[in-house]
Image (cartoon, rainbow, N blue to C red):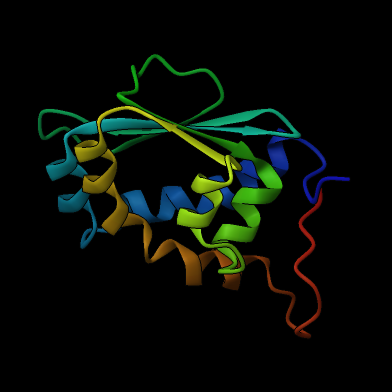
Length: 139
């Protein structure tokens, strides 16, 4: 069974932290310099998060269907994304094992990676209960 009850639970956790990063004034230049659009397609439950900034425009984050046309698509199970964001899963290993699929120009993928490093501790803080218990995310 998935840690996420539905797409809304994904948007309330993973999506929320991505929105925080996209609006961080220190990270805005990283997204803008990447000059691309990335769609994260998550499964079980089905959801999509699209993050884009082209031509120096502000970073835009969409949940679900989006009019933004992605250059990069990263696909994985929602639980795989959760484990990666908790620091429990190495992204390189997950790619090698086929747990994470990536399509698009490698240069664009590499351009956005620095912006997502701060996501990990923020995500852990969001999903960790105050008593230090498990990392269950449900809705």
